[in-house]
Length: 179
Image 1: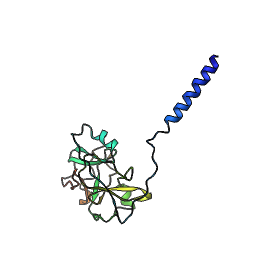
Image 2: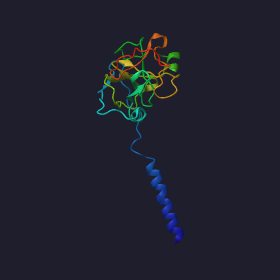
Image 3: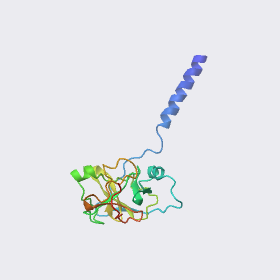
Image 4: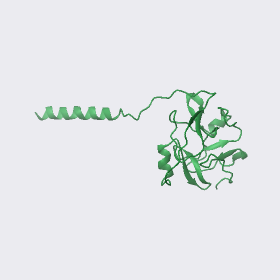
């Protein structure tokens, strides 16, 4: 008898563990956006001050956080989001490709409807590399900087005079690079 009970409990545990691994949170890749019509998501306005930028960042594709530059837009990992002056607003294309894209990776949406917290600029997507969707604010593609090692780092601010962090409104931060 004890062996039947053990086998029944062991089998039940295996089934439960297997079912737990198949959560509803798993998603399939979304259809890619049209190059001629970037998708737009409604901006979200925070109802209360954010207690932890990194906590909000993990729940959103874009959120805001406090850095040495002031309040800025960050990606889902809390890394500073930048715009590139050579991009054309609303063009639906990124001018940062090849070697540029290796140093300045695109900020990629997790779904066709990006999750946004605290960003008041108009958020959208454009077709990115490998079928991804690159996030935009006010029609400008967003990037991170590979030399930013920790959330809220802003080492890319002002690089070559053409890379800028963003305020929650989507306006470029024009302050000099933070030390």
